[in-house]
Length: 385
Picture 1 (cartoon, rainbow, N blue to C red):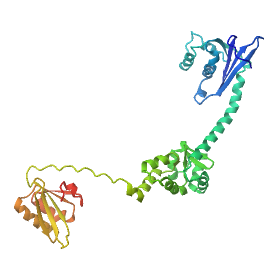
Picture 2: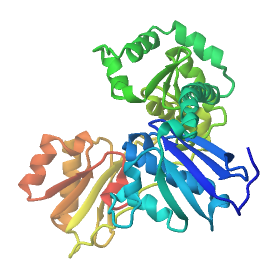
Picture 3: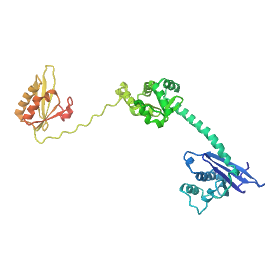
Picture 4: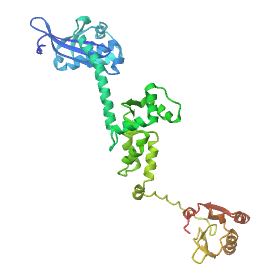
């Protein structure tokens, strides 16, 4: 190699292949020979590998010039390529496709001439051959290293990877699942249908099943995992967020909810459900148009109290009763109605003595509309009895 000299003729030799790019920056020395100043190569990503050959060659020119920007910017230099059609692409009269045109626009700040030279005379070609052989090994090593990293970091705290491996080996369902993933032959069992929908996300590494970057926990370890996750008694949302980052099994969300809802300590400190606001009862137009009826008791002497309240005036009528059958309730209501008149609407709960056929016939015979509300929930009647 030689030292860089901005005063001598500079040439950039580039080459592109289906796997990588190579560039060799050379300068003509005093003895007339070309000697390398710098060289570089890189592999193509998945998108670049789908480029056509002329696009890869043009990418090699663009990448090589930008790679050696420090050496080439401000100079008039020469670019050597072994792809002859590329020479016409750089002519001002040629209208290239959109992708090639974007690459040419990136090179507008440089002054260079592009020339064709046979690949046998292009030293950048050797850089691509070594790239292809090294790439397979590097990708394989990177993949294995990434899978090891995922497995190690997805293990829940207070557990080890060996524990999961041992339990997975003893779990017959997981072993069948591993066979399905490896051979791509799925059983028609109902339990496998969930995993069949996720088959593109599943993989096996060292006898451990992964869904993406999460470990599929075998059946025997699931209660322990939930217990570990709930040691600090976090809520449902935070517990789900914590477990979803590392592990998976079908129905994990439902099991988390059931665990926390049945946890005694969580119920003691959790906020009680908020009561729904009571909807105001519409005020009737006239007194004794709508009344509410309810019973309370028994009291120490065995008595019950029948309460009738007018929704318009809030005026109460109270009757003390020894028996609360429908027949006796009707007798007391007739006594009250004889004083105030028949109401248009009566509101009661769904107690047996308030919905019997006998009292229903009484309301129908007197033209009274009967509205029923939930038993033991007097708020639904709109007035507190």
